[in-house]
Length: 102
Image (tube, rainbow, N blue to C red):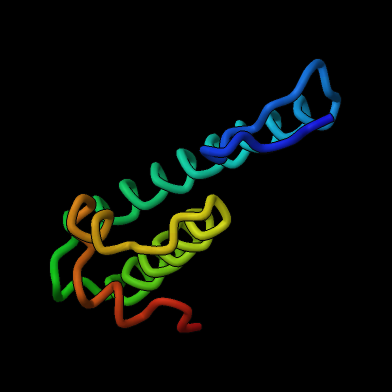
């Protein structure tokens, strides 16, 4: 049986449900890490590219797609506010205004 303590922590014996919950949380964390790595690589590519480069538009959209995916993964993990990671990754405004754009 799985139940919550008064402070909100899960309490369970050797529950298969708890084991599944732990596996799901581990996969969410792993996916979030992979999405963060994609953001880092995409933003590095954008920063290393000359503003006049003909492929800049494609690299900019790839960065926006990576950030969009990262934000979605964060939300799936219950993390709704992105202000901190926007600052941490130094996500430029030109990327943020393109989130979700195709």
